[in-house]
Length: 376
Ligand SMILES: [Zn+2]
Figure 1: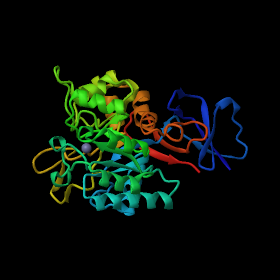
Figure 2: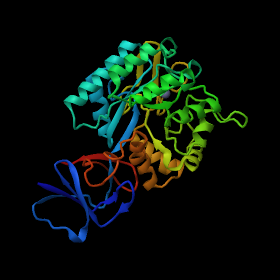
Figure 3: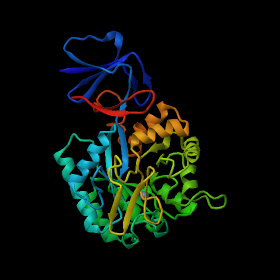
Figure 4: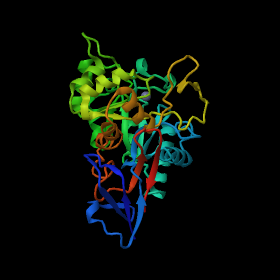
C-alpha cells in the first residue's frame, strides 16, 4: 500500500516545492509529484496541513542519549538510547561519538555499534565517530589527558582491523601523524577529520592536501586564525572543499562567528549537536575525572570549561535561523544534505528524492517544534 503525504511545503534538499505530494512505498520515497496528478485510489493519505517537511536531520557528532554516555557505556543499549532520543527531536540519522579512552574501550564501542547495526539494519545508526585518542594534548578540551596519546602503527592497525566498516569519521590531530599513518587510515575507508589540533596553518594545509576532508567542531579545540599564523581555522577557511561542522548553541562560538564562517565556507558548513546528552535529563555527569554540570543550557565541568553541548540538531537549526540570520531553507540543508555530503552519504540519505528513506522531520514556520515522521 502506498502512502501520500499531502499539503506540505517540501524541502527536498535541493529546492522547496509547494503543491506537490510525496508518495511512499515500503519505507522508501517512490515519487514526488505535482498535486494535479494526484489520484487518491489505493493510497493512505497523511495530510500535513501546511507544515514543512524535510529529510530527517543527520547528526555526525553526538556523545550520549537521554541516559547514557557512549564512552562511559560503550554498549548497544547506549546506541539505542542515542538513536531514540535523537529521533524524537527529528534527527533520523546519527553517528554516535566515542571519545579518547583506552583501546579496549574503543574496541567495545566498535563492537556495540556493529552489533546494533546488524540487528537494526533499518535504523538511522550510520556507524560511529571516533574522536581521539590521538589528539594534541594542548587542545584536548574535555578529553582526559591520561588517555590522549601518540599514534603507534600497532594501535592504528588494531583500530582499523576492528573498526574498518564501522568508523565513519575519526578525529585526529594530524600534526602528530606520519604521512604513512594518514595514508593507511584513508586507504581503509576511514574518513579523517582534523580536530583537537594544535597544527600551524602549514601543517593543517598539509593535512588537507593529504586527503583529510573535514574538520571537527570548527573553532573549538583548534588553532585560531591569527593574522601572522592562520592556524587550523585559517586553513579550513582557505580550502573551499573542506567541510566544517559547527555547534550553533551560542556558547561554543559566538553567533557572529558562525555567520562569518557561513560567508566563507558557504555550502561546506553544516550543523552538529556535539550533545553530551539529549533532552536535558542528565544534569550532573561523572566519568572518571571528566565531570559536567548542566546549567543555563550548557554543560560545564567543575573548572568552568565547556564539556560538550546541550542542544539538539533542531535547536541548532532554530538558532541558525533566529540568531545567526541564515534562511530556513539553508539551515535545513545544513542539517541534512550537507551533513550527508560531508560523510559521503548523499546518495542514500539527506534528501527527499526517489529511492531515499521515508524518514522525515516536520516543523512549522515558527521552528518551535520539530518532530519525526517515519512512513512505512
Ligand atoms: Zn571535541
